[in-house]
Length: 161
Image (tube, rainbow, N blue to C red; front, side, top):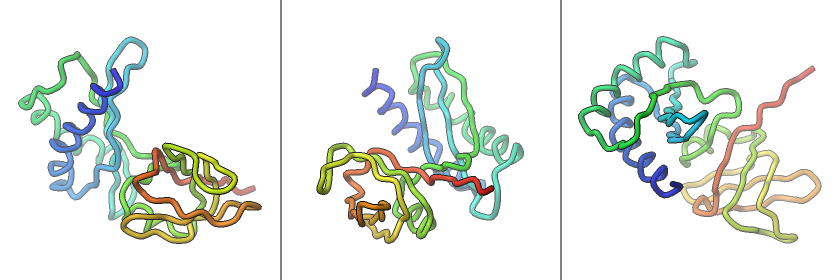
């Protein structure tokens, strides 16, 4: 199931990304997951010009709905959901990391890195290039992580009192 979900996600990204971009929006992430005995294709979008609200989600949904039906690459019955990435938005592309410089991030790697070896990094994003990031982990120093080693990365929103 894992590889099937991954291939559906990749194909959905190929089909949906240009259509969403044509609406002036950005496709941040794609998930194809089974929840409560139902398959869900979830698209996370961003609006470079401002926030993501119901109008942007409806616009993106309308833009991709027919194309997904025409392409017909998902064999299971599924529901399409389009939403904002939320406060702890995913960081996928080098430009996402660039926008998050100086902010707190949570990064998980595919395998252990650094000394002592770890797979989870929580700290301030100090630098970001096309192929690596540097995260300063409080009490442990700065870790340089190749983007190819990043399994998952998110902004870590901090609530202030």
